Image 1 (cartoon, helix red, strand yellow):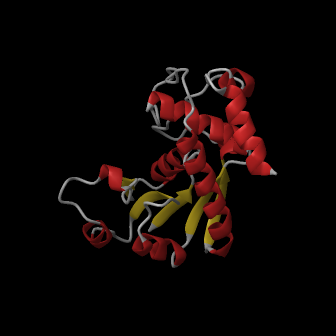
Image 2: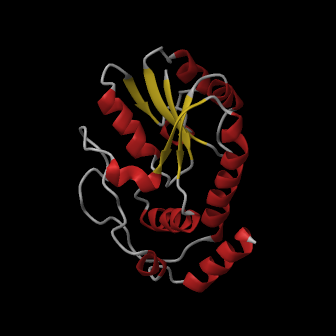
Image 3: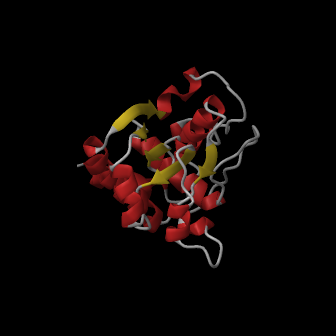
Length: 189
């Protein structure tokens, strides 16, 4: 079983696809335990029962993460994905949320400008904080860094970076840029 564990906007989709391309005999399950992707009659129990030794999936820490899935993460080797630049990660969360576009497999720009909601900021900060508490306690088989993605060779179908702008240009896409920066500065204190 290959598990990719991280936070949103950290490169987990890239590294999950990268590992699948590297190990094509794995059963690619993507965000197998994300309730958003469950069919109406689907359950965590069904999804847990469907796991095989060759399953490959990613998990984001968050309030929706079922404790039984967390137990799998705690008791198996995991590939951890980290984004070092937290402001860029937070900005990426806002841009993806505004556009409601989370991944792209073509080289088109997908972001648009708009208002960054405080609930999105609070959600990504909560996830980063919970991740930072949990991951050092895990059986980590690899640590992948978002910032190293450009050094990885293209080994098959991989997602493209959605945001082609500088950090300043990205921040300028928020109607409430100053407010977002204040939230961030209050958080890092």
